[in-house]
Image (cartoon, rainbow over all chains, first blue to last red; front, side):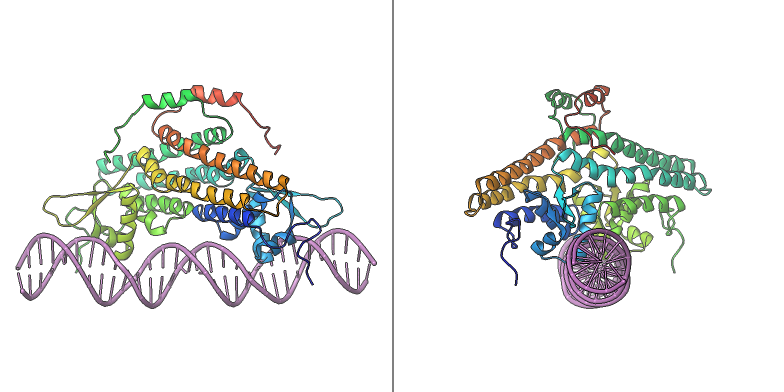
Length: 192
Length: 192
DNA sequence: TTGAAAGTTCAAACATTTTTGAACCAAAAA
DNA sequence: TTTTTGGTTCAAAAATGTTTGAACTTTCAA
């Protein structure tokens, strides 16, 4: 027989508020193409007042231990959740990271940056394939070189952007910046 | 019987360079969780010197007409490709958008911004569910309100960021900005 | 030791997304 | 007209991605 509340006075079923928070993060997860279960996990942790033990996460969300284990591993790896050690309790407790700087920073460092930095290998492959092309006209080769240069430029721009992103997610954006932006329309907007 | 080259002197098979460009964009597409075919389409257009007609896209990539049609619709809708009208030719020609500002701008406007702006509805639902909770302590309610406030704050930050992103993808990032960033470490970094 | 509790792993089941291809429509050519 | 060309649509097939659950590992407690 199972009581309605556990020793921490937390009901087994989700409260209306918890469900709403979870729903929000499930939507966000789907926008980021992450599994639904990851959204559920983060939503539960985000709404919680205190760290939650693994078995309670499983029972309250009603997902399998396997899903929970994998999802929590992912959240921990990306810095979106952290493990909390509770004395005299063998279970693993989790809590959500709520600092947006760390959340964004973790995501960028974990997935975006490695991808951008890995691109150099592919740029070299493209370069080689252009140089090796016997049958192409000067003009065509020059065109391809030009496109490759654009790609490299994009990549560099994106890399430069990362620290900016992290920074502005943790500090107010200076008004002077918005002024700056008004002044440099370097290419005409497409008329909509 | 099919000749090796069409009237524009473009071979049916992909050149080594084209394949490399396509491979790059297929990887990018997969990182963005877009269908492989979309990466192939954009890669082909990106490498091309001139706009390519629909039927040639299909035959050169070796994908179905259906895939090509849907993928090109997506690329056009998001501003990553544009239709080019060629006099005396009934076919639809496509070319890649190569301005990073427009590419990024299109993506943000098409998918990110609508999502962020749609969140208000959900914030209200969360708010209501907190207010409606009879059985919660003052402390718990206050906690949930606090978390909701954090969420709203994130959302606003993200919205403010969009124009910044678009701007810096089209203009050099002023050095003064990097200086600024050194000065405001508003929260301590986690020691790694 | 042995037993039980807390989690992890991973193959199979299930679910979702992507691609194909055949039927279809519209516009130009015959 | 009728036929052909160029392309779209969409149901079904194929490919991917996610979740489950049972077997397993590890650690603590008796």
